[in-house]
Length: 287
Image 1 (cartoon, rainbow, N blue to C red):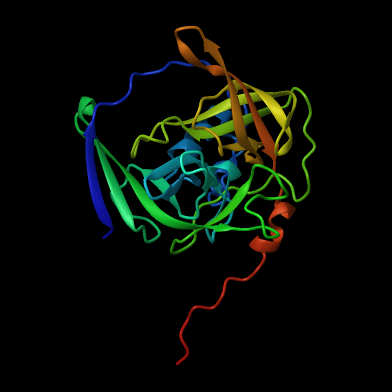
Image 2: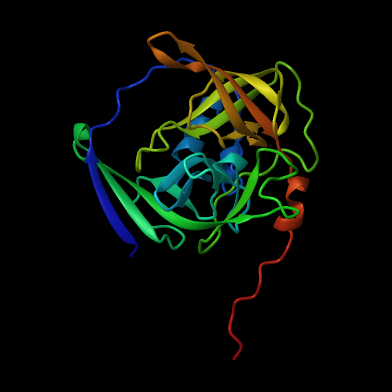
């Protein structure tokens, strides 16, 4: 049984957003979700209710620094994509090298050999409990760099036991995206709030491009907020991008309004195929 930490707090105020969600999802570990007679909204419900999800919170931690972002599992062995800038600490003014992945769940059964368990009790929901399971993770450098192809992308390997749920890539090669394409952003709304299960699948629309220090990224219009960096972006239920930055509306004396523009890098399998296709080392001991 992993080490358990219990927190008790009221839930956050409810937020209300209306959007047309029209993109079906294909979860790689659950092919039965592809039934033709399922409505798009029902398919979304099935994905968001799946446990454990292939979407995680990524944490960089060192000394008295802790920074978090989003991530998505892309292989049953626990390879995970996120943003590269999660590796950088402005507070320490340097890169950090210790990482953890956090899987959130309503189940009290630790999955995949978790090292720690956090339990959150929501008092204003009649003491309903939610859980967060922690796993050590390792940054997998690509061509000697923390970043994949000089982009704001990083590949991690979660230290877990057994096959993990994962999301398939949309394409082996660079995907062709167009202005007006409707995609779906997947992200935990409160990644810094221990074990908070609030998770959103919301539509975004490709509207342009932006030049950044990590190269050209696509711009999309839709709901976004600080903390959603690293979130998976899906097309037809498969991974087509990783969110890098947000450009929210800032209102005087009000602060951030979490509706605006976000930018993302497109992703495809051949970007990391060499790592994914390398057999895992044999750790069994000889007789």
